Image 1 (cartoon, one colour):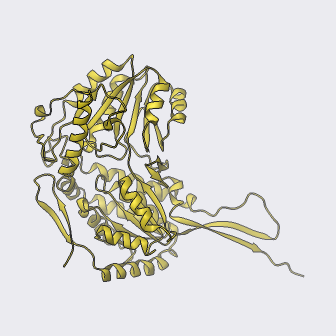
Image 2: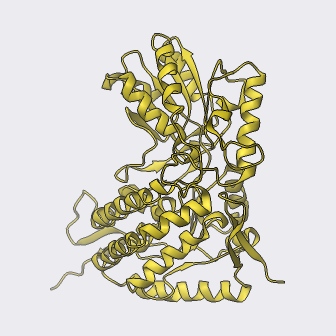
Image 3: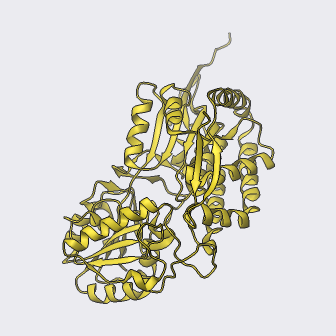
Length: 466
């Protein structure tokens, strides 16, 4: 029986994409083609490889209107924001192309030795397996695909079932610019087939973005194969609003950071701590601005908050919110005022909770939806203690006019990235990484080439004449 991979649209509940999973023969042939293509690709000059990846970006941007509509149908993002993800794709891919020559240059020892030539080269690992999530299917994919190809690797992409068409778009764009056949392949797989590829040692590096439990499954599957892993897993990103913060600016940015993409962001704001001197004003402004969201059909240009990707995800957020309220949290918004919010559906209104504490899951466990808890704190030390009271550590943001205070607080917070006066953003010039249950490894920046290459040392003793 042919196994099917389906995307059920959150817009209306119908099957939007239906694909057969690859057969075992197709998987084997794909792996063989990738290995063969990579042997030739690694010998193509670096500048030519980088130029092809930049051309890929241009080809993908040309599909922007279709991509925006497909994202609305597949995972519920309002169409008015659909092409924004492509701007991030371009920024990241172009940056990685720009720094490639420096990042991949030979490392020459500082000490010089007459009669010897010594250096460390960066060689491609071979075959990179990118396993991408549905929440930002273009951005999370380009993080590894672009630098992997630039570095001389072949790439196998498994896109999430919810956003299969994003994988197709990558394939079409690479085919359009004439990337050598077999070098990049979007393949439709079941979970068991993904695990078999890892456990069989068929790839050299895995770039995975997803849940903590799925990350553990990746580790178990790869155990004993010596395949390297880069894991970006869960998050519960905090923000701290200090006494000197520009309150209006902080509110505008933190509302967006909490609710953009219906809160389905790896580095979205999930909990906020506000100095007690600014707490009441902050909450009042935050609630007023959140109330202006328009929940509705993501294909309607007026919609600013679409449905979550799946009904079960929305139900999980509803349950987490109810549990917090049962423990004493105060909700500030009436879901009925947003019209479309209906239990059992992916359509979920935003919610702001106060009176929260860390006995509540909403302040410690990943929500990944449009709910935010806001707590008052006495001082910086209490804010840091609460920000660190989480099993996750992807990003944290500090809202202050004092750079040194932000630096001091940032050094104390257990996280992969510290922001001052911004949030929910990935700078391609900086390493994207996390701590604790958020995973390990780094992508982007010059450091992002590290997991996609291996060092090879050359130690030549020069012969003497006479």
